[in-house]
Image (cartoon, rainbow, N blue to C red):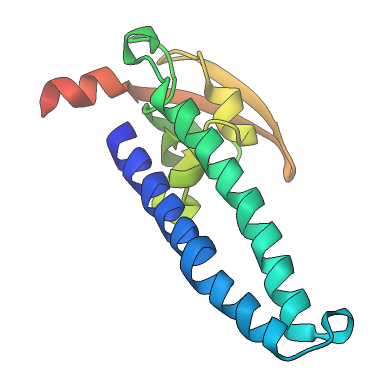
Amino acid sequence: MTIHIKKKLEEEIRLIEYELKNELPQELKTAVAMGDLSENAEYQSAKQRQEILNAKLAHLRKRLAEVSMINFEKIPRDRVSYGSTVVLYDTQKRVEITYKLVSVEESDLQKGLISTSSPIGKGLLNQRQGDMVKINTPGGTKEFEILKLTTIHDEEDSD
């Protein structure tokens, strides 16, 4: 799983670095050739894009370093954590929901992938199968029973 995240982050970094080293310098050079930089919209736009890309690049490098430091040995085998798949019973809606806890980069609610830093993700962390959990969300308090828990270790064992 972290290999997938690392590859995604590395690809984004590579694309941004390419734009910063190849495309933006050409845009800046073209804009400078147009003359007066104080009223040159192309120059201002390229400089602003350069600042945005540099900030994004710094953020991606920081995330890559964080992801690289995940120690799978410290991820619990009996509680909800990163990489866990949980089958929940929503006591208010009376339906079962399945979520997989992932990183921010991987999250996709439509696919049932929720971030460990989302309200529901945070509320589920360190819970066990059979636990009743109340979670405050922007839409109100939700109450779930954890019907089934599959940890990242269980998934690796079944591969």
